[in-house]
Image (cartoon, rainbow, N blue to C red):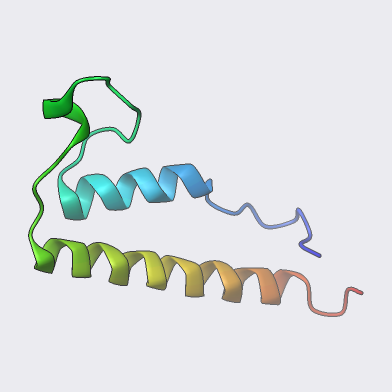
Length: 72
């Protein structure tokens, strides 16, 4: 169980930042326009985004485990 003592970054904000920084996608909201909802991205950008997501997950897990030590 997570303790609320340390603020975790909002999951959606982290995902949106990765999409913008690595895939150059400004919003993950559906725009109902093909040219806005579908994006051509390079494989290296996808790899970079996945690596960033993986690193964010590890950081979140480490942050969670350090804030919940001694709690059961």
